[in-house]
Length: 143
Image (cartoon, rainbow, N blue to C red; front, side):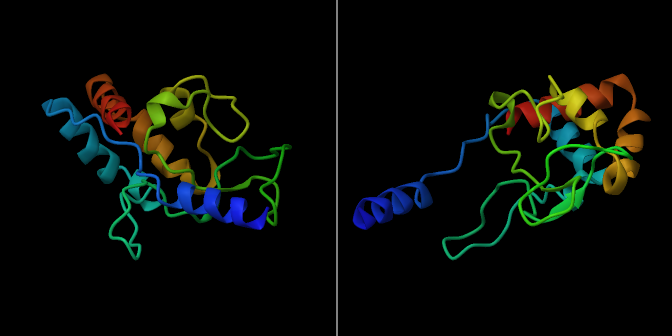
C-alpha cells in the first residue's frame, strides 16, 4: 500500500550513515590529507549540508564523466554514456567491486579507473610514493 511505501521511505531516510572506523593511526590522517591535496575531495566532498546537519557521505552527488575515452557501457538514467553520479564513499571498504560496472576489484583499481574529469587526480595518485598511496587506501578503508 502507499502507507507501507511511505513507511519504508521514512525508515530508509532516517537510517544513520555508515560509521567511520575511527582509526587514530597517523597513516590514516596522512591519507585523508592526501585525499584532499590531490583533488579527490572536489567530487568526493567530505560532507554535504542537510536539514538534519552535515552528512559525511564523501560525494557531491553530481554527474561526472570519469570513464576512459571511447567508453561503451551503461549510462546513468538521464545522462550521456560515461556520466555517473559520484557515489558516496562512506562504508566503501565493504562495497567491492568498485566503479559503476564493477570492473575495479579493489580500491587501488578504482582510483586507477578514473579518467576524463578525474584524470589529473588519477595522475596525481600515480605520482605519490608507495607510502602515500598506502596511506590513502588506509584512509578510504576507514570510511
